[in-house]
Structures are given as C-alpha cells and as structure tokens.
Image (cartoon, rainbow, N blue to C red; front, side):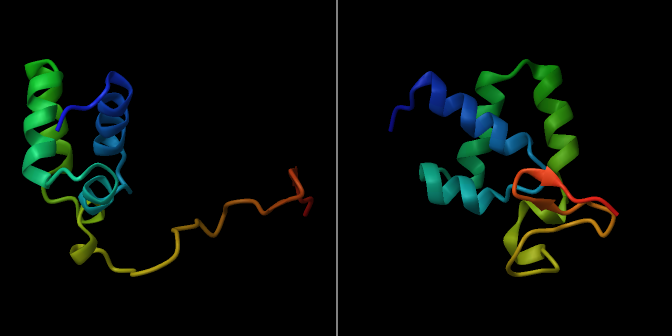
Length: 90
C-alpha cells in the first residue's frame, strides 16, 4: 500500500509520541510494528532512526499489552481542570 506524504508524516509523528502505541498505528494505517520500523529507517536520517529506536525500545507505553492501565487517558494530578475553555481558578 502506498501512503501520501501527509500520511507518512502522521505515521512518523505517531511513532515518536511516547503514549501512542504501535497498535494505534496498526489500527489507523494497517502497518505492523516491523513495517513502522522499516518506514522510519527509510524516511529518517540514520542518526535520527538510531535515536528513535533507542527511545522506543522497551518503552511500555508503546505496547498495549505492557501498559499498566487499560482504558482512559493518563492525567497528572497537578494538571489544571479546563472548564468551558477557561482554566478554573483555585
């Protein structure tokens, strides 16, 4: 399957994001983890690819099976509540 430049940019962006698992890329673009790795190797400079591989290798958030939480999104306890596009006051 061929992808547009915009799709390739989005795949690369999702691959770099810490909290986007490979399964999300598979669901959206039908690419396996190995295919994402091959695409990153092809599209990025060798130094960028090596840096990315070092970063994602063993990262539990990149694999749904290794995550500690199943549903929902992570939210820091110090994150402010946003209500009607205004940050609530303390």
